[in-house]
Image (cartoon, rainbow, N blue to C red; front, side, top):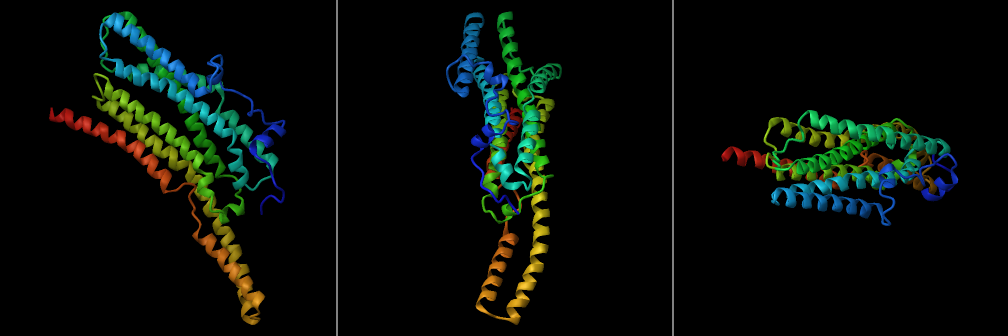
Length: 347
């Protein structure tokens, strides 16, 4: 029915566990800029600023034009944004153990081991790096890097290709983490659930971290749409519109499908406990009717209150607030694309 002993904060628990090595480990994305004496988000902001500055100098010197400055500015934002999100996710996932300890009915050592195994999968650096390279190669071969830029100098073309490779490399890294976190949340739904969660009003608050992961991914999607619309070709082909639309569907699926597994876990536990509780409630009701003493009636009232809480509890690990955020971030760029298509047709 729950752990009979108190447990400390995640930081202390992880430090005390010799098996959990994730407290002090840094991703290669952090190590890459570790010489810059600043938090990781400022490190990547500086890195993106240097890229944008170099690109601007090349464009102004060789092209004698600032026509593409906005596009390359957005591109530099994306280069910084995606490593920031991956590192942020890595730091937050270290604390995800608190959520697991609250909702999973297993010994603490097993939950810690399970969390460690999942962290090893989600943040496998070799797989992250490999998918980053493969996504860059794939994007080139399917012409996702054709935006209508025309350069007078081969130096400008080379700078664009380097910037775009970096952006797609980090996109591939982010996609790997995106898919693995979804699988991790799906696997949580296969574990036994702690009955105490059914009586807690904080289930959605505890599950909000995954919603934040989705919002971060959706923000990348929104900015990538802004980049496409800032280029000469915009989203002028059905292929590009299809790819862009596919990612919108992917984000919605990423948000809903893995958490549906947790929803099923909650529903299954709720059904089992309600059936068991109903039998005990009937016994208490018979006892109160046969002997309507104050204690028996008070006990019956408490049982009825608990049954009402179980019956009225939310069976989804997210609320309308998170859904609104996701829909707005995904739908708004979609509307911009539709307007772009309509205006192109009118012209």
